[in-house]
Length: 185
Image (tube, rainbow, N blue to C red; front, side):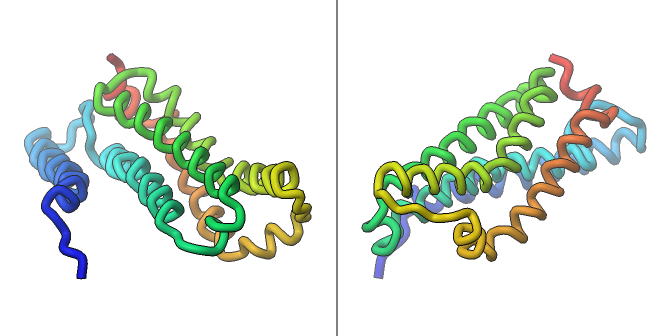
């Protein structure tokens, strides 16, 4: 049995502890302000920040899953897996940049977040198109869109939920007074 070291668990603990500490601090500040609208990570903005915090982690876990997968697609179509890893890397870069701007409370966050939301919405269609292109150009395998959608029926429902969430968060970032007051630097 494989023993887990503290250095493997520590990053995961930090990723959970930091949003938890932010939640405690936000709760403390909200009680101190007695309901007045002030800038900061409170309410819905805190939920957005917590969600954004886990976006690069989710993409990194997806990359690790693709790399660790033995047999199947990895053995027969390595370029297909590399293309999916590249798409996940773009997600990590965009969400990391958005996270850095958010932590700095930079005004550019309000511009970059809709770009990240659009990328997350387009992630599945781009993955499908890239997969068709790689299969056709590198491996000579032609697959129609109907066959691709039939193979991805389990991915479509979560993607639709993700589209709804991304659109809602993008609208929130554009219209919220708290977001406008918080991201001014």
